[in-house]
Every structure is written in structure tokens, then in C-alpha cells.
Image 1 (spheres, protein in one colour):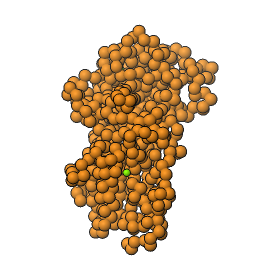
Image 2: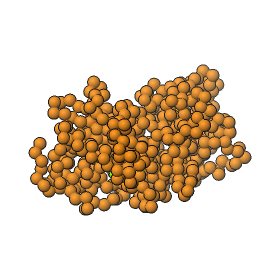
Image 3: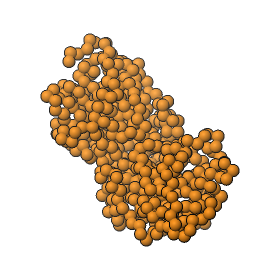
Image 4: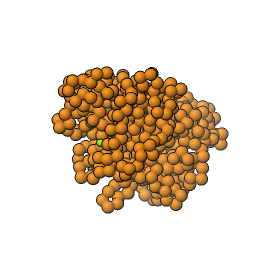
Length: 247
Length: 247
Ligand SMILES: [Mg+2]
Ligand SMILES: [Mg+2]
């Protein structure tokens, strides 16, 4: 596909295309410009966020990050809505699940990624601004060898403490609203190739400073490991015979 | 209503009657004999379990607890199914959410409450076998002054640790499958009265030994406090003007 002219908007992938391979779950599903998410009322962040893009989307430079701003999601009932004040002075970044940089093709699509429903509290330096950002770059690079890339991203709450032989899940909650700080994040990519084949990659990263010298493959996991932890099947519409092909 | 003859079965409330006042959420909803539940794949226990019963149901003694046995829920995908082995030697009881004692009217309804999807790991002595059991008795007693009682029960994962001014949610997970041990449980009751009015009561109890001398009213909370913590609206089909009537 030829790159769009600089400044030209490229069409937003319609929801039925973003979700071509099926829904990980059906709870609180929201269609947004350029992404689709399931919201977790209890933890006040998404369960998962799905995106789909191509090289053409990434090459279009129609959107300007300076025009965006973080906002509270008015479509979520107030009891469960994450607030700007919850994140304030928490020490955590408002970390994008669907990355803003994937949505330069259309201002409204980039704007939509700044909803707090698309955010989780992330460690800033060394994670959101470091290793996690590099993972986002890596995902975008997959468009160089793929016709379409289907990305799913979400928080995890994994056992992270052992004491006296017992296992615990322990995570911080921030603000008056007790927004959960996930212990880990997952990102999975389904890449459609020119020859009609598909390849899947899955990663689980801890929400902490990660040394940039550690190779990304060290965080690669089988897809079912994400599925077990996230509580949903990823790409459930994909025929099993294609599902576990390793890229 | 006259009590049923000893040993006679009373009809199971149909799901549309159990759920007359609406669904707290729509994720992984399962219809069972005598109760309806939403399953939490991530924590491997229910999100909520709803029941409805009358004095007639409770007076019928058709079911025998000795005929029941705990069982793994084959309707849950294996990745997320709680196992008998997860609970074994965990130190926790397999605690009923829909209480077995509410379902003596029909053997199959009592049997169904022994599914691990209707269980959460509960502290045994002083909670499952103590204060929580007394709450279950109290709920049954409400049928003496109510024509129908609609009960909703579920686990909670509340902030339970403060350190250096930061709040944390910390809970144990048991077994190979990491079944979550909830920090608290809620129980809410909507009682339909003879005069056509309704009254709602809501309770949140910590999953720990509770001194039986503490009055139950100390654990009573406004309904919206359960709704905020559970991530769902309770009795959402009820008109607002009736919703917050205090019994
Ligand atoms: Mg980021
Ligand atoms: Mg019990």
C-alpha cells in the first residue's frame, strides 16, 4: 500500500474489522474511534483494548499529539469511572494501553486514546517511558512484514509475593477512587502476512523499571499463558490450526 | 402460603424470576437449578450469585445434604475452572455463596450449590462455620416477614493494607490454579412485603474470624457501597424511588 500524503487522514478501521478475530470477553465493551475496549468496573481500568492497523495507518501523519488531552470517560457510570484526580500525585504515569502513536492517521482516533478508560497506572521512567515504549515501537515495526496487525493490550494482576509458602496477589490502588495499579501488562499481536498466513506473538511485562539491555524475547510467552491470566481467549475466532503458529 | 408436606419437592424458581430485578453484570452468566451466577475467570470464583426464595421453599425438606458432593464446574473452560485440588490443604473452607440451606426444596437445586463456581475460599472456624452462617440464618428468617426474598452474594477484593501512605489490595491465591481468597464478601437482600413495598439490606463482611457478639448491623452498608466495590448495580431493574428504602 502506498503511504498517504503527509497530513492526509486515513480511514479508521471499523469495529468489525478491529474485532475480526473475536472478543476476549463481552463485559462492558465500548467502541471507540480506532479501538475497542472492555472496561473493568472493579479495577477502574480496561480488561483489554484491541486495535488494528497497517503500514498505511502508521505512515499517515494527520494527527497532532499536542492537540490531545487526557479525559475522564463520561460513558462509564460515575461509581466506576477513573478520575484525573485519582492519578494526580500518585507517582504513576497515565499509561496508554492502545498507544497514541498507533493512531496518527486521524485526529479523533488519537484523541480517543487519551480516555482514562484506555489508561492504567504505569511506572513512568524505565517502563512507560522506557521498555514498554520500546515494545510499542516493536509492534509498529511488525507492519513492515505484515499486511495487518491486530493488537490486544491489557493489565494483569498476578501473584507477586510468597510468604510462608503462601502466594499472594498484591497491588497498589491510587486516588480516592482506588484505581488499580496492575502488577503486569500483556500485549499480543496477530500479524496477517502477504502469503495469507498468520503469526501470533504474546508478551507479559512486569509494571516496573526494566533494564533496556534485557532482550524482549525474555518476556515472550505462549498465548494461552496470557489467556489464563487475563481471563479471556485472545483471537477466539481464529481457527485452532492457525492459532499457535510461532512467528 | 401453607408449608409443603415433609419430603415434598417445591418448584425451583425459574431464572426469569430469580433475576426479576435485573442483572448486576452480564459476564459469564450461568443458569443453574435454583440460582444464577456470573463467573470471574481471573479469580476462579463467582462475581455474584443470585437466589430467590419464599417461606414455602425453606419449609420444604425434600433435599438431603448427605446426598450432595462438591464438584468442579465442567461448564467453565478448563483454563479458568477452580479445581478440587486447588482447595485441598489450603486451610480454607469451600464456602457457599448461594447457601445450601436455602435449597432444601429440591435435591437438584441443593446439589447445584456444591459446584466450585458457587464457592469461594472462606475462613472456616469463626466465619464460614460462624458469623457468615449466622448471616445466612438471618437471611432465611426474612421470609417470615416477606413474601419473596431476592438474595445476591459475592466476593470482594478491597484495599486492606496501608503502608507509607499508600493503599494496597492484598489477597492470597490457593492451589496450582491460583484461586483468589476474597478479602470480603457481600450479601444483599431485596424483600418483597405483603403490602407491595420492598426493602433492601446490604452487608459487607471481612473474610476472617468475627466475634459472634458483634451485632450484624455493624456490617450493614448502603447498597451503593456494595455496587461500587462489586463493579455492578444490584437490582438495577428496580425503580429508583423504591431502591434505597431502608428496612
Ligand atoms: Mg505509554
Ligand atoms: Mg457456608
